[in-house]
Length: 230
Image (cartoon, rainbow, N blue to C red; front, side, top):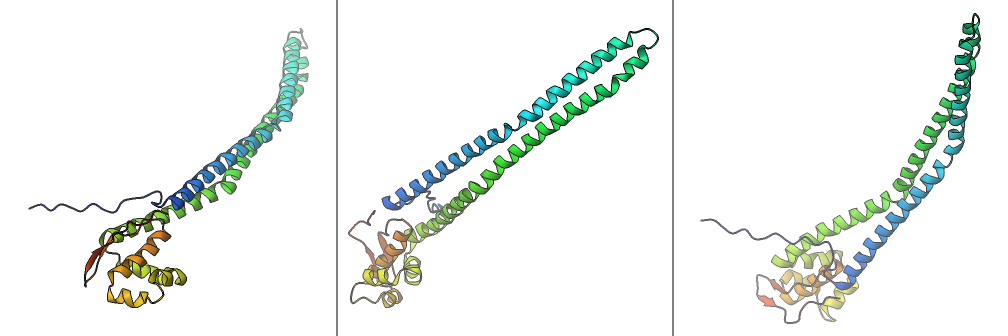
């Protein structure tokens, strides 16, 4: 006889409570805008550095022209009878010099291009990558914690109540328990109403709605008022 597996806890990307969800959306938008601004600045800086290629391009053009002039003169001199070979060879240093000048210009252009690309990537790596990495790490941590909290909210809120006692703000815990309440003792006794209040504190801290019911060894209750969404 096959058994029906229970569905796992939901995977939330945004909080259930409107205020926390709005804050997350604003954060996402801010990170996206920041990345766009950084990439735009990196592209602008890349183009600015590329403008430094102008001298190298001029040097390349001048070298090609010099080489062309001397190469043409060498070809013309080669046609002179008797002394053509010697006369043509006299123009060879000029041709080589023009070639060296053009090669230097091209090397300068390539170096500027490499620097421009490196500077652009450096800007992105320094200004955008840490922000995106931090945002992603915090959001992933929140998603994993919320997944665990949802599982506890659906099955048993004792763990959430304990977390509220251990990690929660003492003032909020006392206010949730009431003036004469004993939250720690109520948790040990498994009092359902106090467990719901404490669980609400922990769930609210993560932007989740409160639990609707709780089961303890003593009794089971279902809250009559719906959990708040604020």
